[in-house]
Image 1: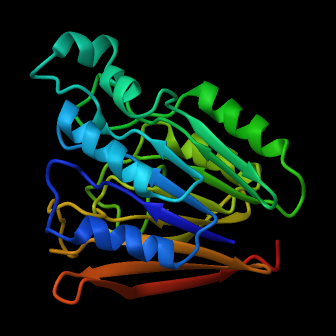
Image 2: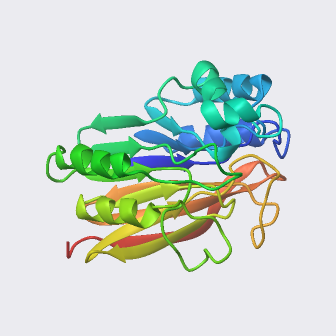
Length: 265
């Protein structure tokens, strides 16, 4: 099983002339079974940015899921009324009618949840309803299913999370995911690619944080670095590659690789 985890392309702030084309080519070359796009497809939620994002999605192989990020909401200084009352109206009209999506296939179950809300500049939140949704959705899946949760805002503290945003209520959702047997939690938002194994309730989960795939909104220590994460399972082993872009050679290559065994679970 192979999954592509892509985040924060930020159409409107694309880093280089060919990065988008080369990203699509690299994803296609790996023959992924599903693609997860974890938010911030636009920079300012403008119509032209959503149009570009829609064309990007059309170029990807199916199936894929997409969840919104905080940059996909109406800007609070432009339309404060919509920011409060219907912050993702343009996202729903121009990109994805459903804010929360799922993929189910033989051996795979992916649930994408919306962690954005209008009453904040960039933070996220998780709701009690989403906790229940995680519990019910994953409990319905057959044994030996790879269970994956996709959101924009990271849920729990990691070794690199100091001074970085976490979703309010994220620990409860993370605990529910662990209890439901989720193996991988995919998020973005930080613009800093990272992979870490976490323990919650006695269960081990791999957290995949994807960097910004195509924009110039880099964050130290990964300055001038575009990337995406390749997730692959073989038997009870799960491997995550952070694939870094080189604009000079127009290629993606392995920047870091983490392998984890679930054999004991």
